[in-house]
Length: 248
Image (cartoon, rainbow, N blue to C red):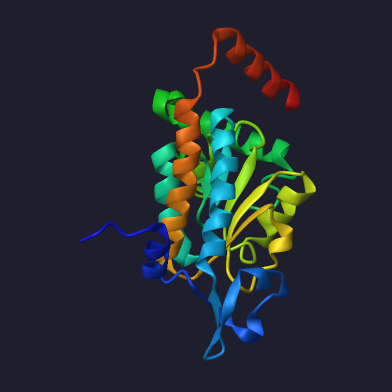
């Protein structure tokens, strides 16, 4: 059996299905093939062209060894976002975007520092000097911080970009990125205003298979860029660390 082309793979995922004509946002019109039974049909060749542009961008981010944050909190996206984030060691948000994660990062960084501190104190036994009731309070605080922030503990500075699944669903994250002039790569359904993102990829954002396929292509491009980049020198590492400290 001949190997399927990328176009065939996307079609097999159901990536060509959009939402109803009534839900269609005018900004996606250039990506539409037409309508069938009042359902938008996406032109997958246009999707692949947009994907290629996003891949090239993420490859350059990887080559620069800069960080990206993966965001996808709706049920269809959580598994793929979690798997991609854990595979590459990237910060990701799969449960709930905390308002101010980007625009109030100085405060978020304090929470991340506190989380690391509590984990270290529990591991070292430092908290054993406290009463049982006090240790229970520390344990409760640790559990709360881990639930909220554990997937972004590697975020020591603002990321170079966001990769978002469903830009309409993640409008708060997109809005924060726009305020800070951070590029956004987004898988966007036909109900999304793609003018709000820098690298829109119009496809079926309600399909688990489509989300997984496109997200894998995006993170592979980032990983390829990262692995092809030369390792930083000791001097460069020290300079980068100093820059991060100066920013915060």
